[in-house]
Amino acid sequence: MTTLYERIGGEPAVDKAVELFYDKVIADDRIAGYFDNLDMVAQANKQKKFLTMVFGGPSDYSGLDMRNAHINLGLGEEHFNAVVENLAQTMRELGVSESDIGEVGKIAGSVKNEILNR
Image 1 (cartoon, rainbow, N blue to C red):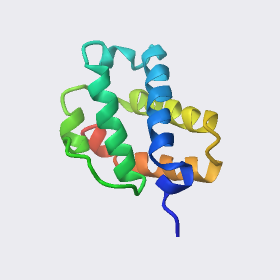
Image 2 (tube, rainbow, N blue to C red; image 1 turned 180 degrees about the vertical axis):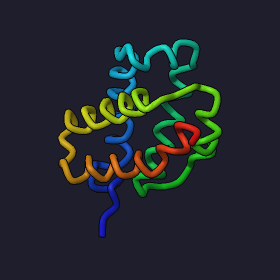
Image 3 (spheres, rainbow, N blue to C red; image 1 turned 90 degrees about the vertical axis):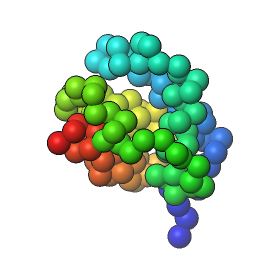
């Protein structure tokens, strides 16, 4: 069985998805402020490694776990939903199937409590 990483197009697709995703995030008033003082090149590189890992590709991610990466941000349901909506829209724009977008949603949902510090 092929991995989600392979089905969406591997490294080139993840790279493009992360670029488009952060364009959307920075334009989204619900969450843009969380990225104001970040090195977005470093953030994008970290996100590419993370998504590659959780989508079943080669694991190069060495960042914090989801709880510790988001612990002091005061995130709520609306922030989580904004990120998931932007990611799903990005995937649609890249021609990813709805079933694979659903799988991405399940992956996001599996770490929701950690991200929201519950």
